[in-house]
Amino acid sequence: MSLHLNAEVGQIAPTVLLPGDPLRARHIAETFFTDPVQHNDVRGMLGFTGTYKGQPVSVQGTGMGMASAGIYIHELINGYGCQTLVRVGTCGSYHENVHVRDLILAQAACTDSNINNIRFGAKNYAPIADFGLLMRAYQVAQARGLRAHVGNIMSSDTFYQDDPTEYKLWASFGVLGVEMEAAQLYTLAAKFGVRALTVLTVSDHLITREETTAEERQLTFNGMIEVALDAALGTA
Ligand SMILES: O=P(O)(O)O[C@H]1O[C@H](CO)[C@@H](O)[C@H]1O
Ligand SMILES: O=c1cc[nH]c(=O)[nH]1
Image (cartoon, rainbow, N blue to C red; front, side, top):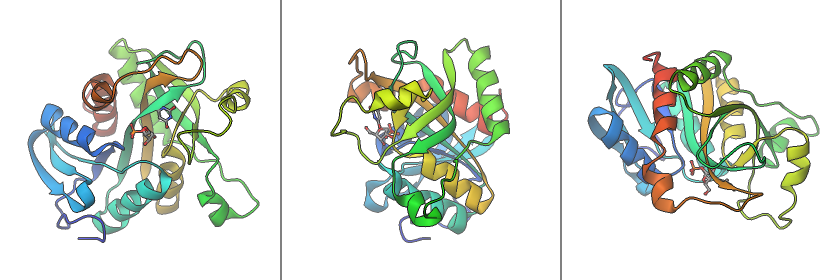
């Protein structure tokens, strides 16, 4: 047990998928896991453990934003010994050629968050993905014929920006899209010596304004989940 997770030690698998949405966690468990058991219900932040292609695996909702996700990531690593953490999330696209429903494999994550400023002061840390996980995820996506972009993303503390054109600066430096957790996942994974990757599905587009529904975000981004599971567990 830890402060925000009421699973017993040993009940959570070494490999964990991390969606922001706890209902996406339930969808993943019900759709992809064999014999899923709910391991957490504290604050409604659902978590489940089962097997996928015979391998033990868990999924744990993290909530939205780095302050929330950091709590679950910290407790999964330090309270339960989790070693491989793969975020499966949604994002907004910054580029014309990164379309709604495409995948982004986040090689690195910029951030506007103050959390790493608290850690590093005036110096900037570059949060990056585990290379082995990233390479495998790209290979799995290619084999499945999915459109997957590999590159830099923005992890923001805010969903609604005061300046709606701010994304253009980041886009001009090659940043592909925006979400709200990866920079913290990568930083904590590095701090505690575990592996991490973020796999995203583009749910909306900052240029075209195209967007998906809440139901679609929760229930239908299954390509991303299969890429994450096969990359994390080596089951492709
Ligand atoms: O779909 P999830 O995983 O929640 O990810 C994205 O969606 C939320 C905002 O709607 C933020 O958590 C952002 O990172
Ligand atoms: O954080 C997010 C997630 C999806 N779409 C966005 O624009 N931002």
